[in-house]
Image 1 (tube, rainbow, N blue to C red):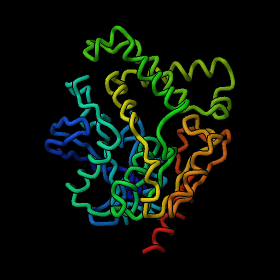
Image 2: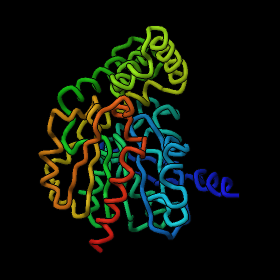
Image 3: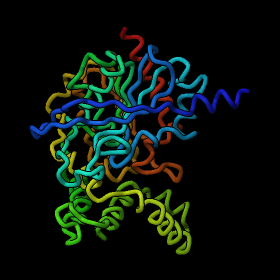
Image 4: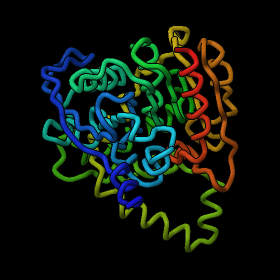
Length: 335
């Protein structure tokens, strides 16, 4: 009986909403389909859960995430919260280039994605959130939420992200992903008949971006194990990716830069990064510097170890669940 209850809490309901004639920052408009997953009951304190680049809300549905946060007695107990995890524009089962428009799909950006998330919430009858929590790209969206809709939520938990424009090695890695696709002759300006070979090169960069040297050395300590991991990873992932979808997803970060308005974030915020994150390396000192401009901001750095997952530590709540609990307590005391 207890197991049945736990499984029910971990399994999301799913739905779709249409944002009619949604206007993009480019000036284009179309009827935008947004797919979403929910845990809990509408009317309870609402939590918006945002995924990373090329991901979807499905990544939160497993026991490692939903089981760790949404079960009875956990910080986001689904008996006491209504949790919404949308698939962002261009991702998952929401409207995306590979649905048919290919490279004629509007070139969305993070502001468009956040506006669509807001529109979805309004259609669901949600006018206030207890929490916005985001991983990687979703973490960057959380920073945008804090500035664009400062009174809409009680707290923000951006994971594996930074509140500055994407530059330096981060930008170069993203350019490598995009150039691997668009410089492939088979890409044909996005009108390819089969996936261009450059998509595989793009996934190589994506794999390295999220990697952890200590974890990989511990998990794959021999040539044979390392080779087997890479072969299996590519075999499993490559068929699920589309070149236009990947290109658009990375291009969406082109004008992200919330750094000018950090003082506008009016609610408690805890930013969590991991020390072995290749995308947001701690030696840059960005968050230590900029968190001071967030009126109620705190920064947590998870130490690197053979147990952390590099950038991907964001989807393992055991490393930051206690920071979520402290954040919720801070937000409750402010009310």
